[in-house]
Image (cartoon, rainbow, N blue to C red):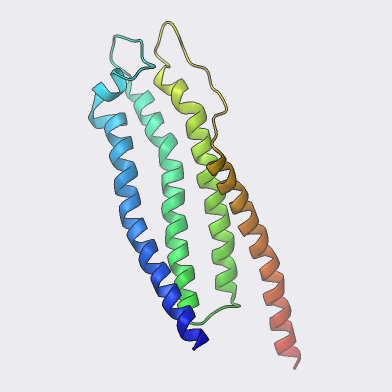
Length: 177
């Protein structure tokens, strides 16, 4: 009964993760791509821009790449979570693949949180780069959500590291007996 409830809960979490994995890129890229490439008036009419000419392509591309890093990290984190829930659904609780998934979730979480903090820190500077007056400098912009995402990533990685030694000890004990 207990394993059945874990399997059902894991399947529900997998379904939610699949829905998120389909919706998240659509939602985020539908904001980033128009601002960076397809609708130049969004950039030119931004409240920080005080430049009358065309915004160079390298700035638009830099803005896109800046936000692409946390987007890709979040997509990878979701794919790893789906794999993790699938292993749980199959009844694998103390396995090296679980440990690897936990550590990869931690790395992706750290990269996503740090990438968003970097994006907030550099986006105003990129947007106002061509201004002749009222230029914006690089500043450290963060939200507690991103800090918690970075700390969660560190915690997951360290927890996976500890779990790895537990799995190794369990394997050693099984071989001894």
